Image 1 (cartoon, one colour):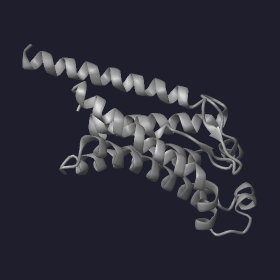
Image 2 (cartoon, one colour):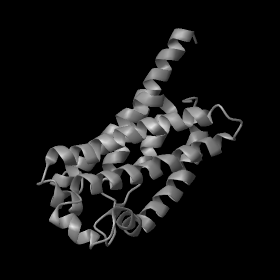
Image 3 (tube, helix red, strand yellow):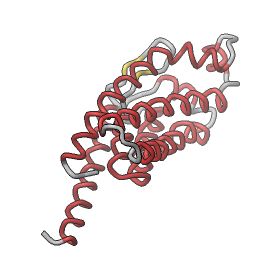
Image 4 (cartoon, helix red, strand yellow):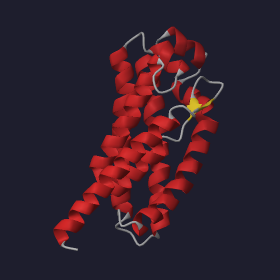
Length: 203
């Protein structure tokens, strides 16, 4: 096979992977696990991390953006539902778009940067992927919750949920279990998938 043919085959494989990851995001949009604080456990950052690993900054941004768009549409009952998003989107759809979409694009870019840094080390491939998955889940929670408080903290709904607690205390109390589960699952699965991507010659 010529170099040109190999390059074309690689591009087709990566485009197929992008389409598959978007399809997975749509499915995951319907299987979020609701939690008492009005938030939910989500594993959508795993496809974002995988795209960032396989396709760098472009892939991370595209799948991060797809995740963010699906998350934004859930505020309107599309591709699943978000009780908190539905309660807040009426105050400002623009701010909600920033909180849901922009934050996820940034996470995709950060995940690509983390993997690029990890790939320069002598760490096993599984560890490189696992660290990337962990960071994707961690920064997703950090950006999502920080922007939630910054942009909507003064709304009656958020003030009621915060119940007089400070921003940091509220974030810790409302995301403790969520964040822990998401980070553990993202770490384990992304590490394993990274090894598979190498076997499939996608990285």
